[in-house]
Image (tube, rainbow, N blue to C red; front, side, top):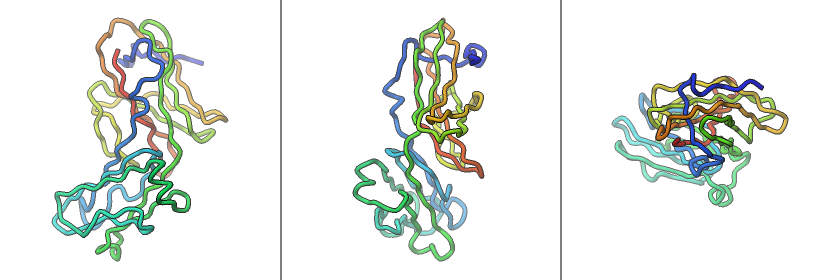
Length: 228
């Protein structure tokens, strides 16, 4: 398998890293409440177990966030500024079971005009790095994918975002550099061999990825930050 030169892309990662604590960090997805009319943006998102969704209020009308199942409620309708967060971890899922881990919700006073949304909780897509030693070879790995699934990876040297995309919040700051797409094997694993340059001590690199489902849908991996 051909290796990607991270010297050519400008990507520098941790020397000697096998799996940093940052690799287990979870996503914080931002959903805008009425940024332009009576809508949630994005309306429907896929999240990993353990991810947090934070709703952020915009505009002058009063809104709330109410799960149809009763699993969560932001309270009475209020105007901006306001935020409301739910962490969809194992404890939450066990206490609030719904079919297919699909949590439909709405703004109670404006559901009749289509102000509705959903959160689909899925098994984690896990981004990690292995055998990273300056001047040698390592790999970027993603597990938990659908067999044959496509995963896109990007990195930033500028920061951890966030950038809002159609299915969540990307933990990368512009400029974002895209790496070649990967295809998962029959075990749901995808790997990219990389050549690691030396001489870049102290550089911080932010990595994030997503499995693409088509039709503008997908699910993010965990974000990963490493320092050489």
